[in-house]
Each structure stands twice: as C-alpha cells, then as structure tokens.
Length: 484
Image (cartoon, helix red, strand yellow):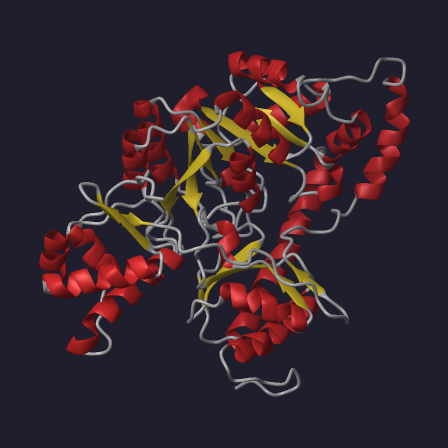
C-alpha cells in the first residue's frame, strides 16, 4: 500500500538546519547516519510532527553544507526506519515509526508510588462545605432536580471570577458540566465531525487527544518550546490555521499540561489576533489557572477570550484546584453558543448532580478562597521538593521550574521514556511516558513528574526512578546506594 499524503505544513531547509544544530558526530564517513539520527531525535522530541514536509534534497544540502549523496543516504535510512515516507512528485514527509508501548507494565508487587496522576487530595474545608450543603439541599428537594445549565448560584460565582480576572461575564454565559473533560467533549461533538482537523499543542493533555480520536477527528500539532525560551509558536499556529484549516483548536495557555508554561498577555493578544483573522474557534482549558504558585491568580494575564471574543470557549474544573471527586466543571461562552451547547448536551446527559454543585458553591465563598490559597502554598513546597530531588538523584535531567500547575516536564539525556516507564514499575513507581503527550507518540526524551504528593513521597519516588533509569542505561544501582 502506498503511503498517504501528508497533512502537516512544510519546514524550510534553513529552519531545519537551525533545529538540527551540530548534527555531525562520527566524521565524514558517518555523515548520513549522523544526519538521520539527528532528524529521528527531532521526531521523537515532537519538534517535527507527523506529516511535516521536508525540504527538497538540493535545498537541504545547501542549508546544511552537505552533499546531495549524504542527504540521499540519510533519507534512505529514515525511510528504512519508518520515520520518513516519500512519493514521486509529492516529496518526503515525516511518518510514524510504528506504535510504542503507551502504558507502563503493572508492578510485580510491593508498595507502588503513583506518579501518573497530577491531582491532589481534597482541599481543606471539604467536610465543612459538605455539612453546609447537606442543610441547604433541603431547598432543592421539592423540585425535579434537573439543572441542564447548573445551579444559578454556582453559575453566578463562576461568572464573577471571570469578571475579576478581566473578562466580564454573566451567569447566562456559564454552564456547569461534569468536569472540564466533559465540557471539552461537549464542545468537540458540536464543533467537529469525522475527518475534521483540530489544532492542538505538542505536547498536550493525553485525554484530549483520545477524545479527538474517538470523534474520528484529526489532531494537528503545533510544537511548543518546552524550555520556555519561545513557548507558543504563534507563527506556527498561524501557518497551521492557513494550511490545514482546522475546524477548531484546543489550547492550554495557563500552566500548560504537561510543560507548565504560561502564555503572557502580549502573547495572548497576538494569538487572539491570529484566531480572529482566521475566524477559528478554540477551546481553552483553564483547569489549572487557579494554581498560580508565584502570585495571585487574579493578577495573572486575562483569559484568552478577552483578546479573541466569542471565538473562545473557556472550560474549567474543580478537579485540580479543589478535588477530582467533585466531578464538576464548566463552560464559559457566548449566550448564543451556550444555547447550542445546551441543546447538544441532551444527547449526552441531562445535567450535573445538584448536591455536588451546592458543595462547590460553598467552596467558592471567602473561606474557600482562603483554603485554596493555602493549597497553593502547599503545592509550592511540593514543587520545590520535586525540583530538589531531581537535581540530587537525576542531575543530568533538565527542566524549567513552572510558576504554576501540578507537574514538572523533565528532559532526559537519552530518548528512553517508554523503556523507563516499564523499568520504573519494577522499582515501585508508576509513571506516564512522554509519548502519551504527543499527537503521534515520540517525546521519548521527556517525562512528566507531578508534584501533588507529599515531599517525602516525592523524594522516595525520584530516588526509585533514579535506580530505574540507571538500569535502563545499563548502569544498575541499588536503591540504597548513595548518589553523587
């Protein structure tokens, strides 16, 4: 069967040359192998997404200062390994090198530290809110209990928070959902169908990718710079909007999952202008916006909707800030779009649980905001403990300390993320390989480590992870051995 034509954009020879950097390692005789390995690494790191058109051999040879024979040899190696596909008259493009294991093996036994969930226990004050809600519930028991838009009091408090963050909002623009993921799926069902393209970041939230695939839509990635030096590639977003014409986008601009990056106000203004020019709607996941570990969430940049208007559908959740067990989220959109979403919701469910909504309403009062401030202080200590543990036990790993969110996005010296996930299970640590966060896998040099566990548990998890990594790299070390 002939390979399918690519969907992605084209990368120029000069840009690819800059991306590859000093790619020669083995001298002139190994030039083709060195170039192929350098391009493979960019694919595995997610910087060359599936479908990216490569420059012609002559253009690439000129940009790299290499012979066309060397370029042809490198492309032959890449084709043999499945990283590149070609077709006469269509050129060459990045292809999927085959499926990789996506989940770590189950542990053989012993105590297991779960390093896969970036979520915290219930916020202090939860029981008190439940007690208050139990008394207030009596006022709702006489009704039918169906609230397709959500309780008015809860919607009012959510709308007020948006207004305080710089986006004037009324309760009529808010609908309560069963979590942010439920909110995204509702928007996805309304905005896209089979074969439609959806703009996403690379890397991004794995469950969003699964939902897009389940809808038989096609995620189209734009690479993020995980070091934080460039962050969002606004020009890349503009190029994808023009070349791939996605039906809508899914973005996380506040403490992005998994990188922890945050788009500043200037970047939001530029991104909003790009979206407005293309008239492309976008779902913005604000699940982590309240977990600002360096400042007051109200002092952060305004929501993206303040720059792109009704094109932005904001979704949020109580899961990361308060407790995943509440299973409550919301959608903030224009009244017209929200009316269409309510109609679409009837095919999925008939509203969110009333009791949980009464609890969450209570948590959004003054005492609840004070408890959330204490939660941020706790997470800041956890983050710093994780950073210290990685520096101690895994000193050749690098990361950019996030200013918020729940996880550290670590770059490893070798592309072994999937292998490490398997080995770590045998050392009593369950981790999620970097490939889960990529549209087409890859990201084998990357690993997300959450800091939602207590500092002592975090330290032990990283210590075990260090032993697992040493085993993968061929230098086994006992858990009890000292680390230099």
